Length: 416
Image (cartoon, rainbow, N blue to C red; front, side, top):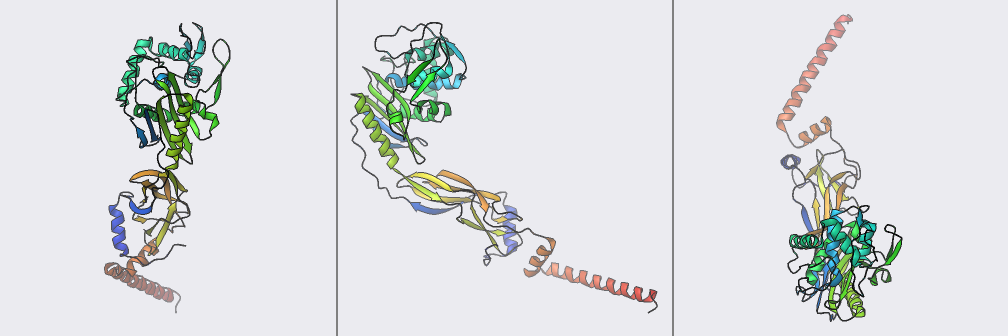
């Protein structure tokens, strides 16, 4: 049953407001909770440059010289992958070029003329950091390394990577190749929006079936697989860049991207990445509004009652500590029945510091009755509609006269 409440305004006024409304209109917004800042102190990071950001918004959670430019080694391959993901199909076949690798370079050992799919080349590029896979993709997509590098720099400009320039698609040391922790985090956020990319970098290993023979490769990011919350992204190491790692972690819906650059060792790179990811994830708290909660009462057309409305599903979000969380309800000022329980009438959302972080349909919590001519008549009379009352009285008099005349005719015909 509807929750019967005394109306704050005449029903006619409410109906007028409904006629003026062309939809739900602006939302009503009510404070829900302000989360205490809390949390631990930022970690002591010894890397020369580092950053941790919220994956969804890019908001910095930790920064240390994040705009400084320096060599980035094989994290260069993130841009190579960005272009390949947007220009190739997973089953598209590329022909390997001759790649004269220097001692110590990471390669698949592709032979000139060997044919491999773009999907396998991307696995090799991102997991095994294979330089010959990067060269094969660059030549296959753009026709030459120089043309591909030009495209890499054009994409960097389009994405707003102000402190980035590429000299090759691999990440070999070159004075004209550099980036910053901030730009690497921005590019990683963009890539993690791509389901293909996220699936690749979150794997511990892969088997490549195309090429001259099957190959098994292992992710050079040792944190993936060793820590369940780590799901990416890319390692890098050269003598000029030191040890570099773009990391990603996810827990209870919160997700963080980290970057450390110029680390003196792989162990330092891994431990400081873990510190940044854990610190970032601990800065979030869970906020929830259950689907059983009534979040608004609205008038029902032709009834002196209000209909309770609730979320169509639970609203859940991980929100940065210290945020002010509000509940936004997008609902019409008046609803017209019949509406069954669960019938959609609007939207409801959680907002943290003004930004919506979770949405759900707004539905009727109980049946909303429909209207009828009789119901409208009763409402109008109860609201004191004098014109309508006079009309109804006249109609009643005319009907009574007609009934009386019909009765007289009937008696005459029967001889009464």
